[in-house]
Structure formats: structure tokens, C-alpha cells
Length: 243
Image (cartoon, rainbow, N blue to C red; front, side):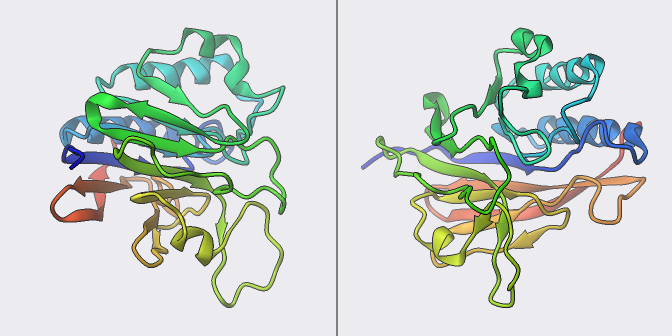
């Protein structure tokens, strides 16, 4: 029988650093999430797309992000989204990221890739997004973890409910989720927290730290608990904003 550790993961997305609306709030929100990782003694941080609002953000803001990640003693995993896509002009290829801390891991493979943390008995899978189109399928190509570790997948896109009729970019269909080999599917792209679990697969949008209404005084994220005996559980955690 494969041994799996009991883990706690902090899952967030859509921090939109560098946005036009009160940019200092998004930075304070990220600081609060980082402190939340420490306070909860989480084993890793997952940021599922749109870390930055656009590719024109300053180098100073990139360094701010890297400094925050370096404060963590645990892995931080980033999936590029539609606002910070991974193309030839990607901000993740700029000079500051050449000095990224060793604990920061960024998905860069367009066909999908595993990032493994043997010490945590954890494998994380994701596809970097180069174009935000209906043809891009965030979960396409995922396979089961080859070693029996926990498998957490990251996907940035739009989940289709039965009432959805419009064509959307980066579609995620219910059957995509249900057929996924992962233990937990960490989703990004929506500002609000939504559980879209299908069958045995727990799948959750963390929502943006500031929420859909852009809170000025609190920050929310999803705490994911992986337990070999009890399975996967999630809950929203709300913290006071750090100035």
C-alpha cells in the first residue's frame, strides 16, 4: 500500500497584482495569504492563474511577488492564467524571475506537466496557458500520478453548468472533472468561491482573495486538507487584511 502524508494546502487564485483598482489592496491581500500559509502551517501554496493583471506590470511588482514567495518555507506553485499567459512575451520570462526563490515552481509546459514533491508525497499537474481560446482545454492530457502520491491538478478556466449556452474560452466540462484522475482539482478564473465537484473528484474555485465585491478589510482563500483516512476536505478561511 502506498504511503501518503496528511497535508494542508492553501489554494488561491486571481490575485491580479498590478490591476488599476486600488492596486495596494491586491498586494496587501497577497501578504495576507502568505501569512495565512504560515499561520495554518500549510504544506504548500497553490496560486491558480492571474497572479498578475497584465504583462505590463513593473519589475518592482515582480520583485514584490518574489519576495513574498521567498518568505515561505514551503513550496509555492503557480499556474499562468489568461491575464498572465505563458507565451514568448510572458512576464514569467523577465529578468526578475531569473532570480526566483527555490521554493517557487511555475508551470511552463503547454501540453501539461507534473511538478513533484516527494517529501510531501504530492504531485501537482497543470497546463500553462499560451492562448485564451475555446480550443484550450485546461485538463487535456492529464494522466494519473505514476507513483501513487496525492495528485492535485490546477486548472484556470470556465466550468460549464447545464444552463451555459455561450462559447467560452478555456472550457472545463463536468465530464472533464468527473473523469480526472486527480484527488483534488484547484480551479481559478472566477472571483467567487464555488464548489463544482463531480463524482469522486473534489473540485473548487477558491475565488479571488478580495472576493467578487473587492473587500477592503478581509481576505479569503480555500484550505484543502488531504487525509489518507478521510479523503479530501475543503473550507473557506477568512483573515483580516494585513496593511
